[in-house]
Image 1 (cartoon, rainbow, N blue to C red):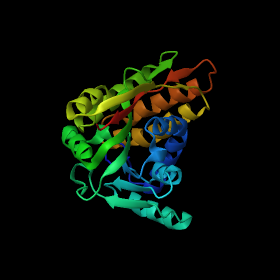
Image 2: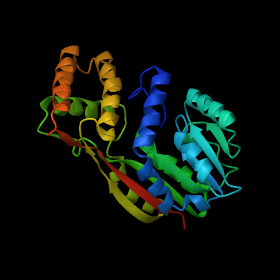
Image 3: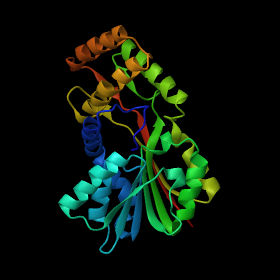
Image 4: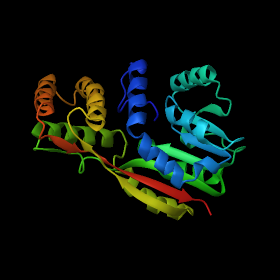
Length: 272
């Protein structure tokens, strides 16, 4: 996932740790997506918006003998982190590329696998980016996407949490103002088909977060990073933030509490 003011703070080390945990939380769903896309049979896979490259390294380990992975991101610090991991773990078939997706120099590459997880929502000119991806793929290549289908409408706590609802309303509007679409996956099947892709599979992904389980922790870690951003941007007051955390921590002690996570859509599309 690329670095963006919308959701990141300046503490890069802390953010890398958050993204590593996020990668672990959604690892099973990601591997299932890769299996449907037949990535283990690919010769060259592109990881779009790779961030620190945790998924890129796993792809490089799972691709067939002689295959390679290109990890692309617009944040140089993430790629430097990944390069250190590549060197330390001696991963010879993983290479990095520093570029925005929309302007990536793919002219000399032809990918038979492309992976994009929680990155397309940040792209302002999505149709241009998808066209570039389509042109960079070989006939028969598979595009595997995991992105938000519904965020605000599916992210619900029970019993009802007024303060969480308030924070989510503010967050949704904040993302919209920064040209980020938390319902991007609703548009993707139509856009992909218009470009010429065949849709192979569409799978909704939603989980239950309960106090102390990994989905609860995934959300909590994000909120601990994002709420200070909202305060800094004067989107919320510290008083509202304190009231939210009081409610959140009270619910955290209640075994009857649960929430449904934002819904993802996992998509596999094929270039004819």
